[in-house]
Length: 616
Image 1 (tube, rainbow, N blue to C red):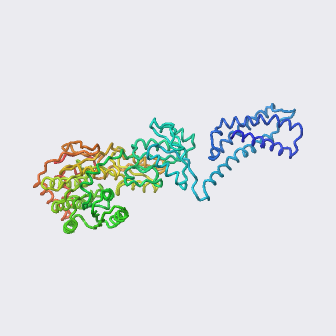
Image 2: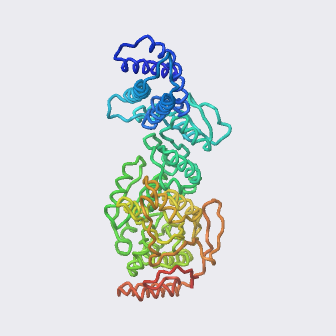
Image 3: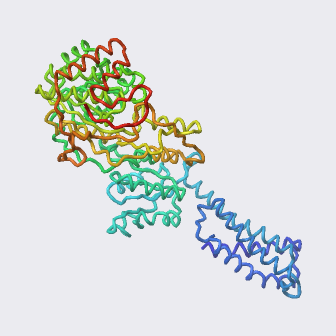
């Protein structure tokens, strides 16, 4: 149809060039010249259009690229005619072809070819929206022909206001190739994505694979980035845990999607066994881990959920969020300091919790190097208060949220978390309360993490600061970490340190590069990366277990358990007593030295070299 229409407009353009050249009066010899010249010109124009790829384009998507192709096509044919005319060979009916006709035809041919295409584009855009402020519709390809993909198709078909037209699907399952879902075809696999984007004129790719591994998501995103098309993703299973799936939740691909891994199959019955119809206390409930713990605990419908934290704004925020949920759970916000034993005793006396999740801690490594006594007061002495009150008030289960930085610690923060583990393990040996600790690495985009800092640096034009080009860290998504905490707790019998499978360590430099690209910029071109060296207390790489603890598998693939180490109770009590005196005297140097004796591995103030130490 394009070729037929182009024939017509090119014939009219050529006739118009003769009429303009001869002021509307074409003499008999030139009518003959026109009749001979027309088929030649039109044929050459059509062949040139074909060579420049004009007929591989849809008129409704005409843009600057398509117009430039038409211009180059017409200019090429015009140049050929000018060369032949200048050589004296273009004689028809005894008359040379006029230079004026050649130039006028060039202009008219270009306008007559591009005009209808541009008008078609404008007409399509206008028909797709009732008024000019509505969004232009986008041709979309859905990656994933499974249940999630069909869910996306169903909701998109009911939401024409979103401006999305799905033209097909792709899936790596060979059995789905060339099959149809409704009126749409599964065109191919992800390997064919670049060709399909080009041939189907795709504006947007929708990834509908909630359980896809991060490597697969990264591959698709890289292809879309190369093809310069927009990418949207259906939220992962961690985000859809409540079953609230909506097309409005389609969002841009994020770093979390590139680090997420296969979903966890939770044993809900065992978790409900220690949460359902009970009073649950969460310390640090306003923090990244604490707030997510509260969200997921709500699903198991405890009788009462106590949100304990020192920051009123964060506690208010999570309280309002949870109260808006449908679960019939009593939400009790409590503003208190875990180090205040009188206040804590009153809380335990009043509410008598059955399960305690202790997530309150100072976690910022460089800051704790400058605030040694505060780190010990909160992370060690505060943990001892909550843990001992749990024993005193016969709490059934106590869970310490620990850190991989407690392994061979080289920082004050890591040493205090290791001390907290020792406190909990000691109590587990002499009480009926089930004490467990769960140890894992960094959670992505938590408060105080590097991601928000980088985003601010990118917004300011850079540079993005990275400690060391070879620095690596274990990363986990917050919902994933919390699910594993809940599951590990159900496994514990008392005294264990559970270690979560953090996958492969990630280079901090790679993470910075990804974030810059997600911001639509190029690393090293638009945003520079600056290496600032390891900060006080930081390691080049993290570990999850000491050599002595070993590693034992559990019935769950992503949860391991470290062998508890023998603890001298009297010696531990003496250590804590000396630390407490140091805190009371605000003796940072003395407390720092004492931590080295107890746990080993704390760097001296100002020292930044990464080392590995064994426990004393």
